[in-house]
Length: 282
Image (cartoon, rainbow, N blue to C red; front, side, top):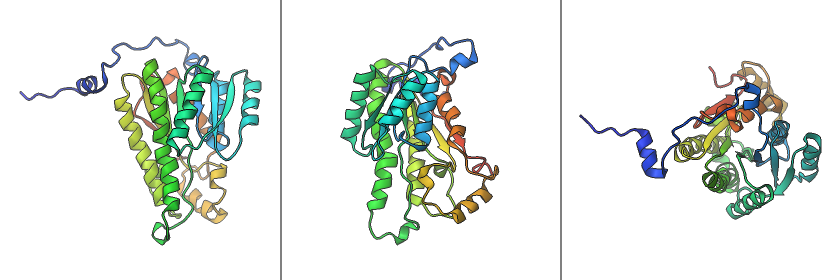
């Protein structure tokens, strides 16, 4: 008879004992999705998907820390706080700078008392076209530093708080581009970065199983400022490959982020939710 220790035994030996009891959960499904009493931190949340998620979390009752770099967000944070009766503050941070991330996370913890939910959402697209035609690596470095390394820096800082508290939900914004190769545009560096984020998340889900959940959301083409540089001719080709025949809007994503953040997903970790209008289905 061969010795075949379980994955639980491996994790217990590596990072400590896993929880053995299910959490006490609300009996009403709407209460499961409530974020009252929780603190959420969202990078890249001065606009686009991140801002929509920040507002949705506030609507669900969470106090929210908004992150920005080049686009100030204090007025947006003030508006969210006033509209939904929660605490909301804006923090300037260069996510591709590890020390800046550590400092910002520490400040948020000091201001709010803790962090229960962290969404690593900040990212930039690849706008240079065919990679073999690039004469320098500045564009590659920018995409990898922000979309991949920045996501890890955020997880590294937030994970310390989650481990200390024995709980937490880490959510990465990945992309359908981590699952497929987009056409007709060429964006190999972006695709590679997002594929790495997907595997980083799955790996952390195992490492962090004793104290936190880790999941990803993979949006498809969403109408935000990040794709403003794309011509209508290219976008019309996108629509031909999307079974629903259109780009999505940010409000069609927020439910996915709320699920992973809330107690509705306490048995969900290492998962990815694709929200792409069916692009990846064929």
